[in-house]
Image 1 (cartoon, rainbow over the protein chains, first blue to last red):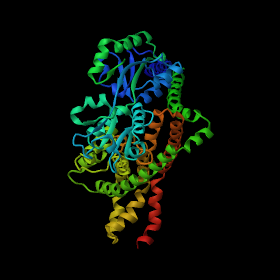
Image 2: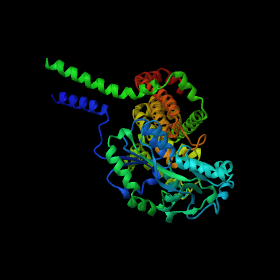
Image 3: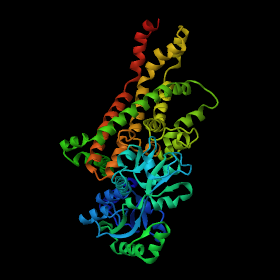
Image 4: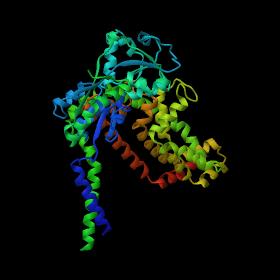
Amino acid sequence: MKLAVAAAALALLVVSSASPAPQARLTVFAAASLTDVLPKIDRSPRYSFAGSNQLAAQIQQGAPADVFAAANMTLPRQLASKHLCSKPVVFARNKLVVIVPPTNPARLRRVADLARNGVKVLVAQPGVPVGTYTAQVLRALHLYERVMANVVSKETDVRGVVAKIVLGEADAGFVYATDAKAVRDDLKVIAIPASAEPGINYGICVVAAGGHAGDARVFVKKVLSRAGQRKLRSYGFVPRR
Amino acid sequence: MKRSVTAVLVGAAAFVALAFLVLPVVAIFLHTTPSHLIDQLSSSVVTDALVVTLETSLIAQALIVLLGTPTAYLLATRRFRARSLAITLVELPLVLPPAVAGIGLLTAFGRSGLLGTSIPFTKAAVVLAVAFVSSPLYVRQAIAAFEAVDPDLVSASRTLGAGTARTFFRIVLPLARTGLAAGLALSLARGIGEFGATIMFAGSLQGVTQTIPLAIYAEFGAGHFDAAVAMSAVLVLFSIVLLLTLRFLLSWPRSSSTRSWFRFGPSTSG
Protein backbone atom coordinates (compact mmCIF):
# COMPACT_ATOMS: atom_id res chain seq x y z
CA MET A 1 0.00 0.00 0.00
CA LYS A 2 2.78 2.40 1.02
CA LEU A 3 4.50 1.53 -2.18
CA ALA A 4 1.39 2.28 -4.20
CA VAL A 5 1.10 5.71 -2.60
CA ALA A 6 4.76 6.37 -3.25
CA ALA A 7 4.41 5.31 -6.87
CA ALA A 8 1.32 7.47 -7.30
CA ALA A 9 3.11 10.44 -5.75
CA LEU A 10 6.05 9.86 -8.05
CA ALA A 11 3.78 9.65 -11.08
CA LEU A 12 2.06 12.87 -10.04
CA LEU A 13 5.43 14.55 -9.64
CA VAL A 14 6.50 13.46 -13.10
CA VAL A 15 3.27 14.63 -14.72
CA SER A 16 3.18 17.96 -12.91
CA SER A 17 6.79 18.75 -13.75
CA ALA A 18 6.32 17.95 -17.43
CA SER A 19 4.71 21.36 -17.94
CA PRO A 20 6.64 23.99 -16.00
CA ALA A 21 4.32 24.96 -13.18
CA PRO A 22 4.14 28.73 -12.72
CA GLN A 23 6.29 29.80 -9.79
CA ALA A 24 4.52 31.58 -6.97
CA ARG A 25 7.09 34.37 -7.09
CA LEU A 26 8.46 36.50 -9.85
CA THR A 27 11.77 35.21 -11.22
CA VAL A 28 14.29 37.78 -12.39
CA PHE A 29 17.34 36.76 -14.44
CA ALA A 30 19.86 39.56 -14.14
CA ALA A 31 23.45 40.35 -15.10
CA ALA A 32 26.00 39.52 -12.39
CA SER A 33 26.87 43.23 -12.19
CA LEU A 34 23.35 43.89 -10.86
CA THR A 35 23.76 41.47 -7.93
CA ASP A 36 23.89 44.17 -5.26
CA VAL A 37 21.48 46.79 -6.56
CA LEU A 38 18.40 44.92 -7.83
CA PRO A 39 17.44 43.36 -4.48
CA LYS A 40 17.64 46.88 -3.03
CA ILE A 41 15.09 48.09 -5.59
CA ASP A 42 12.77 45.14 -5.04
CA ARG A 43 13.58 42.31 -2.68
CA SER A 44 10.53 40.15 -3.31
CA PRO A 45 11.48 38.37 -6.59
CA ARG A 46 13.68 35.32 -6.84
CA TYR A 47 16.91 36.44 -8.50
CA SER A 48 19.30 34.48 -10.64
CA PHE A 49 22.51 36.43 -11.21
CA ALA A 50 25.05 35.24 -13.78
CA GLY A 51 26.75 36.34 -16.97
CA SER A 52 24.01 37.84 -19.17
CA ASN A 53 24.94 35.42 -21.93
CA GLN A 54 24.53 32.41 -19.62
CA LEU A 55 21.11 33.70 -18.65
CA ALA A 56 20.12 34.34 -22.27
CA ALA A 57 21.20 30.81 -23.13
CA GLN A 58 19.09 29.48 -20.27
CA ILE A 59 16.05 31.51 -21.39
CA GLN A 60 16.50 30.12 -24.91
CA GLN A 61 16.46 26.65 -23.37
CA GLY A 62 13.14 27.44 -21.71
CA ALA A 63 14.16 28.53 -18.21
CA PRO A 64 11.14 29.96 -16.37
CA ALA A 65 12.30 33.59 -16.07
CA ASP A 66 9.85 36.49 -15.94
CA VAL A 67 12.28 39.38 -16.38
CA PHE A 68 15.64 39.53 -18.13
CA ALA A 69 17.94 42.39 -17.09
CA ALA A 70 21.10 42.23 -19.20
CA ALA A 71 24.36 44.14 -19.26
CA ASN A 72 23.84 45.03 -22.91
CA MET A 73 21.06 45.55 -25.42
CA THR A 74 22.28 42.89 -27.84
CA LEU A 75 21.20 39.84 -25.85
CA PRO A 76 17.65 41.01 -24.97
CA ARG A 77 17.24 42.22 -28.58
CA GLN A 78 18.24 38.76 -29.80
CA LEU A 79 15.67 37.18 -27.49
CA ALA A 80 13.03 39.71 -28.59
CA SER A 81 13.69 38.91 -32.26
CA LYS A 82 12.90 35.28 -31.42
CA HIS A 83 9.73 36.41 -29.58
CA LEU A 84 11.16 35.09 -26.32
CA CYS A 85 10.90 38.47 -24.60
CA SER A 86 9.36 41.91 -25.04
CA LYS A 87 11.12 44.77 -26.83
CA PRO A 88 13.95 45.73 -24.42
CA VAL A 89 14.38 49.22 -22.96
CA VAL A 90 17.55 50.78 -21.55
CA PHE A 91 17.32 51.04 -17.76
CA ALA A 92 20.88 51.94 -16.78
CA ARG A 93 24.27 52.72 -18.17
CA ASN A 94 27.68 51.71 -16.89
CA LYS A 95 31.37 52.33 -17.46
CA LEU A 96 34.31 50.01 -17.86
CA VAL A 97 37.34 50.37 -15.58
CA VAL A 98 40.55 48.51 -14.83
CA ILE A 99 40.92 47.25 -11.27
CA VAL A 100 44.15 46.25 -9.55
CA PRO A 101 44.75 44.76 -6.08
CA PRO A 102 45.33 47.37 -3.33
CA THR A 103 49.06 46.61 -3.31
CA ASN A 104 49.19 47.01 -7.11
CA PRO A 105 51.85 44.29 -7.44
CA ALA A 106 52.59 45.05 -11.11
CA ARG A 107 52.73 48.82 -10.46
CA LEU A 108 50.25 49.69 -13.15
CA ARG A 109 49.29 53.33 -13.68
CA ARG A 110 47.53 53.45 -17.01
CA VAL A 111 45.73 50.99 -19.26
CA ALA A 112 48.74 50.80 -21.59
CA ASP A 113 50.81 49.35 -18.72
CA LEU A 114 48.71 46.17 -18.97
CA ALA A 115 50.58 45.38 -22.18
CA ARG A 116 53.88 45.05 -20.30
CA ASN A 117 55.50 41.63 -20.20
CA GLY A 118 54.43 39.36 -17.36
CA VAL A 119 51.40 41.33 -16.19
CA LYS A 120 48.63 38.91 -15.23
CA VAL A 121 45.38 40.19 -16.72
CA LEU A 122 41.86 38.88 -16.15
CA VAL A 123 38.97 39.41 -18.53
CA ALA A 124 35.50 37.95 -18.86
CA GLN A 125 35.09 35.30 -21.54
CA PRO A 126 33.93 36.25 -25.03
CA GLY A 127 30.16 36.47 -25.19
CA VAL A 128 29.81 37.85 -21.66
CA PRO A 129 28.95 41.53 -22.22
CA VAL A 130 31.82 42.82 -20.09
CA GLY A 131 34.20 40.63 -22.12
CA THR A 132 32.88 42.13 -25.34
CA TYR A 133 33.19 45.68 -23.96
CA THR A 134 36.76 44.92 -22.85
CA ALA A 135 37.66 43.86 -26.38
CA GLN A 136 36.09 47.06 -27.77
CA VAL A 137 38.09 49.25 -25.38
CA LEU A 138 41.36 47.47 -26.10
CA ARG A 139 40.81 47.71 -29.85
CA ALA A 140 40.04 51.43 -29.54
CA LEU A 141 43.30 51.88 -27.62
CA HIS A 142 45.24 49.68 -30.10
CA LEU A 143 46.27 47.43 -27.22
CA TYR A 144 44.14 44.37 -28.04
CA GLU A 145 46.80 41.86 -29.15
CA ARG A 146 49.36 42.82 -26.53
CA VAL A 147 46.98 42.84 -23.56
CA MET A 148 45.18 39.68 -24.65
CA ALA A 149 48.58 37.94 -24.69
CA ASN A 150 48.80 38.71 -20.96
CA VAL A 151 45.38 37.27 -20.12
CA VAL A 152 45.71 34.40 -17.64
CA SER A 153 42.02 33.55 -17.40
CA LYS A 154 38.74 34.31 -19.12
CA GLU A 155 36.20 34.29 -16.33
CA THR A 156 32.61 33.23 -16.84
CA ASP A 157 31.24 36.47 -15.38
CA VAL A 158 32.40 39.82 -14.06
CA ARG A 159 32.22 38.67 -10.45
CA GLY A 160 34.91 36.09 -11.11
CA VAL A 161 37.23 38.86 -12.27
CA VAL A 162 36.47 41.02 -9.21
CA ALA A 163 36.94 38.15 -6.75
CA LYS A 164 40.33 37.13 -8.12
CA ILE A 165 41.64 40.71 -8.19
CA VAL A 166 40.45 41.38 -4.62
CA LEU A 167 42.27 38.17 -3.64
CA GLY A 168 45.37 39.50 -5.35
CA GLU A 169 45.74 36.44 -7.59
CA ALA A 170 46.12 38.53 -10.74
CA ASP A 171 47.48 42.00 -11.44
CA ALA A 172 44.62 43.69 -13.30
CA GLY A 173 41.11 43.02 -14.54
CA PHE A 174 38.45 44.70 -16.63
CA VAL A 175 35.17 45.22 -14.80
CA TYR A 176 32.28 47.65 -14.58
CA ALA A 177 32.68 50.83 -12.56
CA THR A 178 29.81 49.58 -10.38
CA ASP A 179 31.67 46.39 -9.45
CA ALA A 180 34.75 48.42 -8.58
CA LYS A 181 32.63 50.70 -6.42
CA ALA A 182 31.08 47.79 -4.53
CA VAL A 183 34.47 46.66 -3.19
CA ARG A 184 36.37 49.93 -3.48
CA ASP A 185 38.24 49.41 -0.20
CA ASP A 186 39.80 46.20 -1.48
CA LEU A 187 41.18 47.42 -4.79
CA LYS A 188 42.41 50.37 -6.84
CA VAL A 189 40.82 51.67 -10.00
CA ILE A 190 42.49 52.80 -13.21
CA ALA A 191 40.19 54.86 -15.41
CA ILE A 192 39.78 54.15 -19.09
CA PRO A 193 40.23 57.16 -21.43
CA ALA A 194 36.83 58.62 -22.31
CA SER A 195 37.67 58.33 -26.00
CA ALA A 196 37.72 54.54 -25.68
CA GLU A 197 34.47 54.26 -23.67
CA PRO A 198 32.30 51.57 -25.25
CA GLY A 199 28.91 53.02 -24.25
CA ILE A 200 27.39 50.39 -21.99
CA ASN A 201 23.59 50.20 -22.00
CA TYR A 202 21.70 47.77 -19.79
CA GLY A 203 18.53 46.39 -21.34
CA ILE A 204 15.50 44.95 -19.57
CA CYS A 205 12.61 42.96 -21.01
CA VAL A 206 9.64 40.83 -19.95
CA VAL A 207 10.21 37.16 -20.73
CA ALA A 208 7.32 35.54 -22.56
CA ALA A 209 7.62 32.08 -20.99
CA GLY A 210 7.55 33.23 -17.37
CA GLY A 211 3.79 33.37 -16.92
CA HIS A 212 3.81 36.52 -14.78
CA ALA A 213 3.69 39.15 -17.49
CA GLY A 214 1.69 41.59 -15.33
CA ASP A 215 3.98 41.37 -12.30
CA ALA A 216 6.99 41.42 -14.58
CA ARG A 217 5.86 44.73 -16.10
CA VAL A 218 5.36 46.13 -12.60
CA PHE A 219 8.94 45.13 -11.76
CA VAL A 220 10.30 46.79 -14.90
CA LYS A 221 8.37 49.97 -14.04
CA LYS A 222 9.87 49.88 -10.55
CA VAL A 223 13.36 49.71 -12.01
CA LEU A 224 12.63 52.59 -14.38
CA SER A 225 10.93 54.68 -11.69
CA ARG A 226 12.60 57.66 -10.07
CA ALA A 227 13.27 55.64 -6.89
CA GLY A 228 14.73 52.76 -8.88
CA GLN A 229 16.95 55.06 -10.90
CA ARG A 230 18.13 56.79 -7.72
CA LYS A 231 19.07 53.39 -6.28
CA LEU A 232 20.96 52.49 -9.45
CA ARG A 233 22.86 55.79 -9.28
CA SER A 234 23.80 55.16 -5.64
CA TYR A 235 25.46 51.93 -6.78
CA GLY A 236 27.51 53.72 -9.41
CA PHE A 237 25.30 53.19 -12.45
CA VAL A 238 24.68 56.10 -14.79
CA PRO A 239 20.91 56.68 -15.06
CA ARG A 240 19.32 56.15 -18.45
CA ARG A 241 18.97 59.21 -20.56
CA MET B 1 -4.10 -10.23 -7.13
CA LYS B 2 -2.62 -7.83 -4.63
CA ARG B 3 0.79 -9.15 -5.38
CA SER B 4 0.46 -8.49 -9.09
CA VAL B 5 -0.65 -4.89 -8.43
CA THR B 6 2.49 -4.39 -6.35
CA ALA B 7 4.58 -5.92 -9.09
CA VAL B 8 3.09 -3.56 -11.67
CA LEU B 9 3.72 -0.54 -9.43
CA VAL B 10 7.28 -1.57 -8.75
CA GLY B 11 7.81 -2.09 -12.45
CA ALA B 12 6.28 1.30 -13.22
CA ALA B 13 8.46 3.02 -10.63
CA ALA B 14 11.55 1.34 -12.03
CA PHE B 15 10.55 2.36 -15.54
CA VAL B 16 10.05 6.00 -14.53
CA ALA B 17 13.36 6.05 -12.67
CA LEU B 18 15.26 4.46 -15.55
CA ALA B 19 13.64 6.71 -18.14
CA PHE B 20 14.50 9.75 -16.06
CA LEU B 21 18.14 8.73 -15.78
CA VAL B 22 18.54 7.69 -19.39
CA LEU B 23 16.63 10.49 -21.11
CA PRO B 24 19.15 13.35 -20.64
CA VAL B 25 21.96 11.11 -21.82
CA VAL B 26 20.06 9.96 -24.88
CA ALA B 27 18.93 13.55 -25.59
CA ILE B 28 22.57 14.62 -25.92
CA PHE B 29 23.01 12.20 -28.79
CA LEU B 30 19.66 12.97 -30.39
CA HIS B 31 20.33 16.74 -30.41
CA THR B 32 22.19 16.65 -33.72
CA THR B 33 23.33 14.23 -36.35
CA PRO B 34 26.51 12.23 -35.66
CA SER B 35 28.32 13.92 -38.55
CA HIS B 36 27.48 17.38 -37.20
CA LEU B 37 28.67 16.22 -33.79
CA ILE B 38 32.00 15.14 -35.26
CA ASP B 39 32.28 18.47 -37.13
CA GLN B 40 31.96 20.30 -33.82
CA LEU B 41 34.71 18.17 -32.33
CA SER B 42 37.26 19.53 -34.78
CA SER B 43 37.00 23.12 -33.53
CA SER B 44 40.07 24.42 -31.72
CA VAL B 45 38.16 25.08 -28.50
CA VAL B 46 37.17 21.41 -28.32
CA THR B 47 40.53 19.93 -29.32
CA ASP B 48 42.39 22.26 -26.95
CA ALA B 49 40.04 21.33 -24.11
CA LEU B 50 40.54 17.62 -24.85
CA VAL B 51 44.33 18.00 -24.81
CA VAL B 52 44.31 20.06 -21.58
CA THR B 53 41.99 17.55 -19.91
CA LEU B 54 44.11 14.56 -20.94
CA GLU B 55 47.38 16.20 -19.94
CA THR B 56 46.24 17.41 -16.55
CA SER B 57 44.33 14.20 -15.76
CA LEU B 58 47.27 11.97 -16.61
CA ILE B 59 49.68 14.01 -14.48
CA ALA B 60 47.20 14.28 -11.61
CA GLN B 61 46.42 10.55 -11.62
CA ALA B 62 50.12 9.66 -11.86
CA LEU B 63 50.78 11.82 -8.80
CA ILE B 64 47.82 10.25 -7.02
CA VAL B 65 49.12 6.73 -7.68
CA LEU B 66 52.69 7.63 -6.74
CA LEU B 67 51.81 9.32 -3.46
CA GLY B 68 48.45 7.71 -2.72
CA THR B 69 49.58 4.07 -2.94
CA PRO B 70 52.18 4.24 -0.14
CA THR B 71 49.77 6.35 1.92
CA ALA B 72 47.00 3.81 1.48
CA TYR B 73 49.35 0.93 2.29
CA LEU B 74 50.47 2.64 5.47
CA LEU B 75 46.90 3.35 6.53
CA ALA B 76 45.79 -0.19 5.67
CA THR B 77 48.56 -2.08 7.44
CA ARG B 78 49.71 0.01 10.39
CA ARG B 79 47.71 0.53 13.54
CA PHE B 80 48.60 3.85 15.13
CA ARG B 81 46.75 6.26 17.35
CA ALA B 82 45.92 8.91 14.75
CA ARG B 83 44.98 6.35 12.11
CA SER B 84 41.25 7.01 12.01
CA LEU B 85 41.92 10.75 12.07
CA ALA B 86 44.31 10.34 9.13
CA ILE B 87 41.72 8.31 7.19
CA THR B 88 39.08 10.95 7.88
CA LEU B 89 41.40 13.68 6.62
CA VAL B 90 42.20 11.72 3.48
CA GLU B 91 38.50 11.22 2.78
CA LEU B 92 37.50 14.81 3.57
CA PRO B 93 37.88 16.23 0.03
CA LEU B 94 35.37 13.61 -1.08
CA VAL B 95 32.52 15.27 0.80
CA LEU B 96 33.75 18.86 0.48
CA PRO B 97 31.83 20.93 -2.06
CA PRO B 98 34.13 21.75 -5.01
CA ALA B 99 33.69 25.46 -4.29
CA VAL B 100 35.17 24.90 -0.83
CA ALA B 101 38.04 23.00 -2.42
CA GLY B 102 38.62 26.01 -4.69
CA ILE B 103 38.70 28.42 -1.76
CA GLY B 104 40.98 26.07 0.15
CA LEU B 105 43.43 25.80 -2.75
CA LEU B 106 43.44 29.58 -3.19
CA THR B 107 44.03 30.27 0.50
CA ALA B 108 46.81 27.67 0.54
CA PHE B 109 48.57 28.08 -2.81
CA GLY B 110 47.28 31.46 -4.03
CA ARG B 111 49.64 34.36 -4.56
CA SER B 112 48.47 35.92 -1.31
CA GLY B 113 47.77 32.54 0.29
CA LEU B 114 49.53 30.61 3.03
CA LEU B 115 52.38 29.42 0.81
CA GLY B 116 52.21 32.38 -1.58
CA THR B 117 52.91 30.58 -4.86
CA SER B 118 52.33 31.65 -8.46
CA ILE B 119 50.47 28.42 -9.26
CA PRO B 120 46.99 29.90 -9.94
CA PHE B 121 46.05 30.20 -13.64
CA THR B 122 48.60 27.56 -14.69
CA LYS B 123 48.26 23.94 -15.78
CA ALA B 124 49.76 23.00 -12.42
CA ALA B 125 46.73 24.64 -10.79
CA VAL B 126 44.42 22.36 -12.77
CA VAL B 127 46.50 19.35 -11.75
CA LEU B 128 46.31 20.35 -8.08
CA ALA B 129 42.55 20.94 -8.23
CA VAL B 130 41.97 17.57 -9.92
CA ALA B 131 44.32 15.77 -7.53
CA PHE B 132 42.71 17.36 -4.49
CA VAL B 133 39.14 16.41 -5.33
CA SER B 134 39.77 12.99 -6.88
CA SER B 135 42.59 11.43 -4.83
CA PRO B 136 40.31 10.30 -1.95
CA LEU B 137 38.50 7.99 -4.37
CA TYR B 138 41.76 6.23 -5.20
CA VAL B 139 43.14 6.18 -1.66
CA ARG B 140 39.91 4.82 -0.16
CA GLN B 141 39.73 2.02 -2.68
CA ALA B 142 43.44 1.31 -2.26
CA ILE B 143 43.10 1.04 1.53
CA ALA B 144 40.28 -1.48 1.08
CA ALA B 145 42.33 -3.41 -1.48
CA PHE B 146 45.38 -3.59 0.78
CA GLU B 147 43.26 -4.56 3.78
CA ALA B 148 41.85 -7.46 1.78
CA VAL B 149 45.29 -8.94 1.24
CA ASP B 150 45.72 -11.97 3.51
CA PRO B 151 48.33 -10.97 6.13
CA ASP B 152 49.44 -14.63 6.34
CA LEU B 153 50.70 -14.40 2.77
CA VAL B 154 52.70 -11.33 3.68
CA SER B 155 54.25 -12.92 6.78
CA ALA B 156 54.93 -16.11 4.82
CA SER B 157 56.81 -14.08 2.26
CA ARG B 158 58.77 -12.32 4.98
CA THR B 159 59.56 -15.67 6.68
CA LEU B 160 60.85 -17.00 3.39
CA GLY B 161 63.35 -14.15 3.35
CA ALA B 162 61.78 -11.52 1.09
CA GLY B 163 62.30 -7.92 2.22
CA THR B 164 59.53 -5.40 2.76
CA ALA B 165 59.88 -3.91 -0.71
CA ARG B 166 60.09 -7.30 -2.41
CA THR B 167 57.06 -8.55 -0.50
CA PHE B 168 55.14 -5.41 -1.43
CA PHE B 169 55.91 -5.60 -5.14
CA ARG B 170 55.70 -9.40 -5.53
CA ILE B 171 52.88 -10.28 -3.15
CA VAL B 172 50.80 -7.31 -2.01
CA LEU B 173 50.67 -5.29 -5.22
CA PRO B 174 49.62 -8.18 -7.52
CA LEU B 175 46.89 -9.17 -5.05
CA ALA B 176 45.61 -5.63 -4.67
CA ARG B 177 45.93 -4.54 -8.27
CA THR B 178 42.30 -4.92 -9.35
CA GLY B 179 41.19 -2.87 -6.36
CA LEU B 180 43.83 -0.26 -7.14
CA ALA B 181 42.78 -0.13 -10.78
CA ALA B 182 39.15 0.31 -9.77
CA GLY B 183 40.16 3.16 -7.48
CA LEU B 184 42.13 4.75 -10.27
CA ALA B 185 39.17 4.48 -12.64
CA LEU B 186 36.89 6.20 -10.09
CA SER B 187 39.47 8.87 -9.41
CA LEU B 188 39.98 9.47 -13.13
CA ALA B 189 36.24 9.82 -13.70
CA ARG B 190 35.88 12.34 -10.88
CA GLY B 191 38.99 14.22 -12.01
CA ILE B 192 37.87 14.60 -15.61
CA GLY B 193 34.54 16.00 -14.46
CA GLU B 194 36.18 18.52 -12.11
CA PHE B 195 34.69 21.99 -12.52
CA GLY B 196 34.21 24.11 -9.40
CA ALA B 197 37.65 23.99 -7.82
CA THR B 198 39.31 24.36 -11.22
CA ILE B 199 37.40 27.47 -12.29
CA MET B 200 38.14 29.12 -8.94
CA PHE B 201 41.77 28.13 -8.58
CA ALA B 202 42.98 27.78 -12.17
CA GLY B 203 40.58 30.05 -14.05
CA SER B 204 39.66 29.21 -17.61
CA LEU B 205 41.90 29.87 -20.61
CA GLN B 206 41.73 27.95 -23.85
CA GLY B 207 44.73 25.69 -24.35
CA VAL B 208 46.07 26.35 -20.85
CA THR B 209 43.57 25.69 -18.09
CA GLN B 210 40.28 25.18 -19.93
CA THR B 211 39.32 21.53 -19.43
CA ILE B 212 36.31 19.95 -21.13
CA PRO B 213 33.80 20.76 -18.35
CA LEU B 214 34.98 24.39 -18.33
CA ALA B 215 34.80 24.53 -22.11
CA ILE B 216 31.27 23.11 -22.04
CA TYR B 217 30.20 25.88 -19.66
CA ALA B 218 32.03 28.56 -21.67
CA GLU B 219 30.62 27.42 -25.00
CA PHE B 220 27.13 27.19 -23.53
CA GLY B 221 27.49 30.76 -22.28
CA ALA B 222 28.90 31.98 -25.58
CA GLY B 223 25.80 30.68 -27.35
CA HIS B 224 27.62 27.77 -29.01
CA PHE B 225 25.21 25.16 -27.76
CA ASP B 226 26.18 22.58 -30.40
CA ALA B 227 29.83 22.61 -29.36
CA ALA B 228 28.77 22.19 -25.73
CA VAL B 229 26.59 19.22 -26.75
CA ALA B 230 29.42 17.65 -28.74
CA MET B 231 31.82 17.84 -25.80
CA SER B 232 29.14 16.47 -23.51
CA ALA B 233 28.72 13.53 -25.86
CA VAL B 234 32.46 12.84 -25.65
CA LEU B 235 32.30 12.85 -21.86
CA VAL B 236 29.27 10.55 -21.87
CA LEU B 237 31.06 8.03 -24.08
CA PHE B 238 34.17 8.27 -21.95
CA SER B 239 32.16 7.75 -18.78
CA ILE B 240 30.44 4.69 -20.24
CA VAL B 241 33.81 3.14 -21.13
CA LEU B 242 35.14 3.95 -17.66
CA LEU B 243 32.09 2.46 -15.97
CA LEU B 244 32.30 -0.74 -17.99
CA THR B 245 35.99 -1.00 -17.13
CA LEU B 246 35.12 -0.53 -13.49
CA ARG B 247 32.42 -3.21 -13.53
CA PHE B 248 34.83 -5.56 -15.26
CA LEU B 249 37.54 -4.86 -12.69
CA LEU B 250 35.29 -5.20 -9.66
CA SER B 251 33.72 -8.45 -10.85
CA TRP B 252 37.20 -9.88 -11.38
CA PRO B 253 37.30 -12.89 -9.05
CA ARG B 254 39.83 -12.17 -6.34
CA SER B 255 40.41 -15.87 -5.72
CA SER B 256 41.82 -16.39 -9.19
CA SER B 257 44.68 -14.00 -8.59
CA THR B 258 45.38 -15.62 -5.24
CA ARG B 259 45.45 -19.03 -6.88
CA SER B 260 47.78 -17.82 -9.59
CA TRP B 261 50.15 -16.61 -6.92
CA PHE B 262 50.20 -20.03 -5.33
CA ARG B 263 50.84 -21.60 -8.66
CA PHE B 264 53.60 -19.28 -9.82
CA GLY B 265 54.68 -17.69 -6.55
CA PRO B 266 57.23 -20.15 -5.18
CA SER B 267 59.24 -20.35 -8.36
CA THR B 268 59.47 -16.56 -8.77
CA SER B 269 60.12 -15.69 -5.15
CA GLY B 270 62.49 -18.58 -4.50
